[in-house]
Length: 212
Image 1 (tube, rainbow, N blue to C red):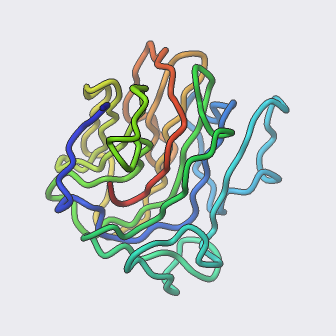
Image 2 (image 1 turned 45 degrees about the vertical axis):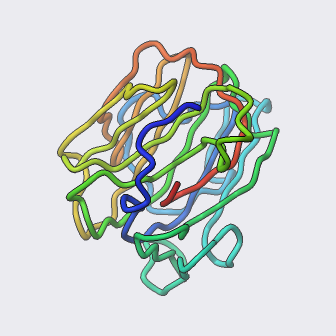
């Protein structure tokens, strides 16, 4: 089982607005001006047709689980999502073979408004929900860390760790993007950390945001 920490006390506390997962394209390769809109394909010029994309804008309850709730405090649009920081609360999207990254480029992005940065908190988790269902593959997760940065774990190890990038009680745009076997974390359009060689072959499992 490809694991980092699994302490349920470390579930994300704060707000999120907009999520996009793109399989087949690393949208971000260098620093950029972070846009103020949500993530829909028509607002990006993708350079290939060989991709699958999944977006949530929190204008409906799609994917929301537990005590996470829509509210009117949003970065974009009419509503965002509040995640209370305990239990299985956040976003859950079940297994989807079309979003198995494999060795391809990918992008995962969202806006986050953290209300706690004093510990390590789960952000993106692509590992199997049930350990017993794990076919022995490789997965990854991204956490918010106590240094106001982000950690990227895969194959049982921490591969990227950043610090001083996130602001408490403010909106932060977060992306992890793999392009040509190099993976980068961006915060507000600025490169925060890089794994120069990332050739991990990621299987498809469930996707969770805010909890594990």
